[in-house]
Length: 331
Image 1 (cartoon, rainbow, N blue to C red):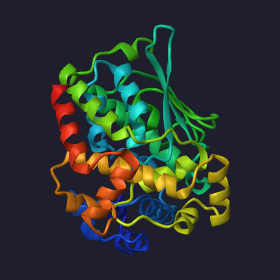
Image 2 (spheres, one colour):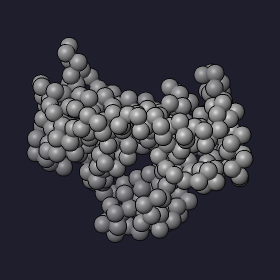
Image 3 (cartoon, one colour):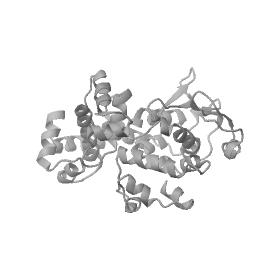
Image 4 (cartoon, rainbow, N blue to C red):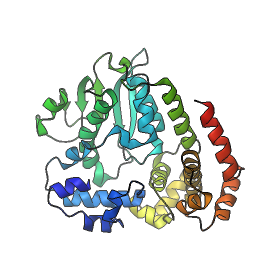
């Protein structure tokens, strides 16, 4: 997104600072940002580029499947298009996404379409995310097959004229605007197409890794899901309830009331996020426990150990040993 800003003569530094970020983060391969920072930057980006036609679409073109991390790798090495999309939709909780994705299937169980649900997208970002999907969606499928996927039709809820941005020619398909949803429909037989990077052994390994990372991820819906997704991107000290409420355009009172209606509390969601992030770090890195504790916002290793035992019944070191053995056994 910063590259897009620079290409249009817009200095990204003030926007990054508004979100509490530094330009140096972009060149740091281990750099991270939390959900609040991402939403703040996204809103600043939209405000600063409102005069540029198609900027969200152009931004979406830059999203590669490999950048999704383990879930992207698990998708790429799946057997066929349907298997890859199933992995992606089942594991999408691993990342922070404003849209929620699902697939439609035929009677034989093969994918016929890819649907985006926007019910939890903040209203001020709806146009941006749907326009961005016009770029990121077909790019996702091109990465999946290493060539353009046979797309029959793209539905989009945006109000755009036919031929806008020459998208029909680019993606070689019809696009219907002012539709009730965003959906990418495939030609018959597309779901059964083999993937060029398919590898059964790697598919098992990456799926086990993703499942381990998702193990502590509860099936939240509604406001609880929105809070969960924001907190999942936090690295270090977690924001308090008023900060998250502001990000979601809610009052703190409304936030607590909505969570209570789902039999949830803000503290419960933080605990589930912390446990999942802890297991992710223990599963996928050799970081010392002190570093793991620091990344999760604990002041010392002992605090991490007490928390981990309280919510999982095991110590971090014992969990890491068991997890490494499980992953090795899947090879």
